[in-house]
Amino acid sequence: MNYGRVAATNRKTNEPMGDKTPNAEAIEAADQRYVMRPWTHPAGEPVIVARAKNCVVTDIHGKDYLDLTSGYFVNNAGHCHPRIVEAATKQMGEVLQVSGKHGTVAMVKLAQRLMELAPKSIDRAFFSTGGSEANEFALKIARQHTKKPDIAYLQNGYHGLTLGSLEVTASEKYRDSAGKPMGTENFAIPMAYCYRCPVGKDVKTCKAECLDGVDKQLASRDTAAIIAEPMQAVGGLAPPQKWWDRLDRIRRDLGILLIADEIQTGLGRTGKMFGVDHYGLQPDIMTGGKGMSGGVGSLGMTAASNAVCKEFFGGTTPTSGGNAVSAAAGLALIDAIVDEGMIDNCANMGRYFAEASWALNDPWIGDVRFTGLLGGIELVRDRATKEILGKTEVAKIKDLLHAEGMLITVSGWHGNYLRLQPPLSVTAGQIDQFIAALRKTLTALRGA
Ligand SMILES: Cc1ncc(COP(=O)(O)O)c(C=O)c1O
Image 1 (cartoon, rainbow, N blue to C red):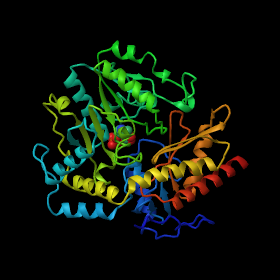
Image 2: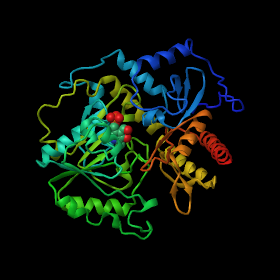
Image 3: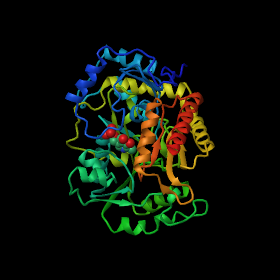
Image 4: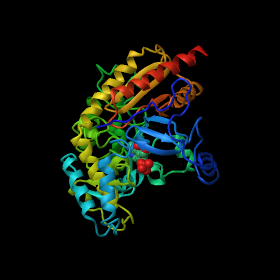
């Protein structure tokens, strides 16, 4: 397998060496004139991509970037994987889309494949068109089954930005931008942030004390379910086993459902097929999205146990849920990551990435967290005090990395976390290229 190249940019002059798209400037002007982008761009963005292959995307000026965002955590098998392209192309000659009330061979096969891979507690899948929608259906199923209104979500949790999913997304920034008030049914419970433990314990010896009182909090409300990512993609926070054991025991004792949001952690991203597999969790409802269609169109999945989905009835018929081309691509994606050993590669490369990042021994690197390739680096001004590195410096680091041909995002509880999540096919050589660019960037910035 050819895992792609990244060095078509001249590393001395930073000049692109690839092919420039005809009318590149006109395309950029049209982007500025006609495309609505509801966020502010860091320097050099948006990158308008002309071609993408595996871990590398090439912009309209011919500049190559190592894509440490996997196209926003979608292209787990790499961009334009030949098996995915072939399967989608073949499907396009057969059937594209039928009413969600009927179905296609590809959709049924994808449901079967996913259910065979899912934890034992999950029996059937319902397809929609994206992650936020999948989570909204999960909330709906939980309420229909339990006849209770309230949903608990974790601090720092992210479950989407449509109005329903935003109700269980913790970010005040996003909630404010949507125009409060939000509903009063949903509420936050504590998350394990062991690097900055909220109750001052050491993760090696703690008893998940950050969850003290959560049983009372959940019991004091009419709580239908807890929605949570097994490990949080915002900030790469992976709670220790004892934390999940404790929360799972509490919610089972109270008869509260667990909704596992596997939209980002699913299909190999964490070095196992699903994030819940790290903890042995058996959720009642599980959601999927992002990479599930291999980058072809978009799929959302809301899956549940037979017992829980019995009451999921009435009025839920998304027009384009589970379209055949995305489903065929999703099947090819699963075959590719399994047959080509990408989940093992992901686990190994996650370890490699963590070791290489620590080996930089940089005073601004406070913590490095990788579970497979769900991960990144938390930046601090001072390792001893863990003072958060300022927004201006973090933005400059991102800009300089961008100029070096590294496509990354910044996220985290405090916005000081470099999220580094390339496709699962990334090589050690490509990680070395990133590490070299990071070393150069951090030293240049401190010297300035
Ligand atoms: C964990 C998680 N849940 C839900 C979503 C929402 O998915 P979408 O953007 O496809 O609506 C995302 C997207 O980033 C996510 O990471």
